[in-house]
Image 1: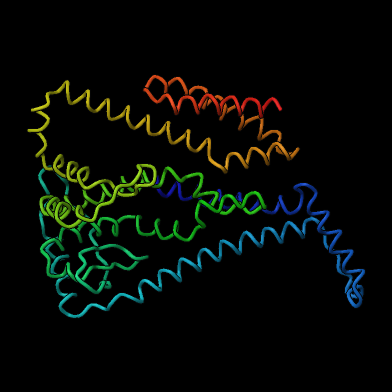
Image 2: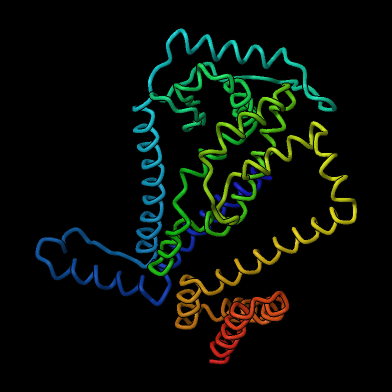
Amino acid sequence: MGIFVLIVTILLEVVGMAFSYWYGAHAFGMGTTWAETINGLATSLPGLHRYHIHITASTVGLFWLAGNMSMHLMAIIAYIKNTAQKRAKMGNPGLREMQAVERACRQLVTASPSAGLEPVQNFGWPLTFDYAPGYGTDIRFLGRKLVIGEGLFKNRHLRPLLAHELGHYNSTDVNLREILACLPPALLVLCTIVGLPLGLGPFVTIFFWPWYWRRREYAADLFAARVGQADDLIQALDQVVHPHEKRKMIFIREYPYVAERIDRLMRLRGMSNIPQLERGPASFCSQRSRHWWRRLRILCLGLLVVSQSLFLRLATALCLACGSGGLLCLVALPVFAGGCFLLGPYLLWRGQAKAARHCFRWSVRWYLSLRA
């Protein structure tokens, strides 16, 4: 699914480039105006009339398209620069570090999987890596280069944490993250007002990727369990990762909380039977249902925040001011107005009176803007 959404994200960026060309050539008659102005300057300035400079609206559109493509190129260069600067601060591993990592990888290859799990068939590990100087115990990928904290080489948790990262390495996660990092950030979609919809793909898929990366963390934990590191990974998560954990909203959190990951690993090992029996089947099902209701409420509140964001207000004003955007108004405004109106009773039923009041207010505003 990640590859499919990545293709959609890139296609949306291509659509943004096509919009830049249309904006420069046809929107508001700007292309014709710019072409006439440049042609007038070429004839009025001495020495330029001999070159027969003639600019058309299509040429102006090509300038806008070139600006969009140059901004994408700058995003790629910025990613390469930042990655190179971070890697320049890392150290080259010595013989002791290389032997520790190679010994851990060979132990993972020969280890038997946890009960009920299939062994890993195709197992590979990076031939080179860097280490972060200091006493840190973090391990991550910096681009396509594996970086291991220096304090982890003498730590017994090196093997399970390395198995987790190898789960990302033996999948498409590293490549996907690298490609996504080369795209402009989603915040630059505000440049659509000036005809440069940068980051259109990341903006449309902004809520998908955090959910996807959380699922990939679970998949990497499963990979570690398939190479026999379920018990050790539970201890490593509890002692190494958990002390550095930070709270984040679910819409932007790319990593599950340590307690959730440990719970998944315990279920894989069959260690969670006792807590379920203490709660009872009915209580367990009711708690799961309440958990899904809570997720639905958070999703509805997120949609409400998005509908009230500055970008949607500016996009509505742009559509209403542009005669060619009438079709977009007829489609977008009823959707947002109806969505806010239907979301209001649900929030009121869930006890979110303030959010419901905002919902009804914004649905009326969308409706009045549609009537206008």
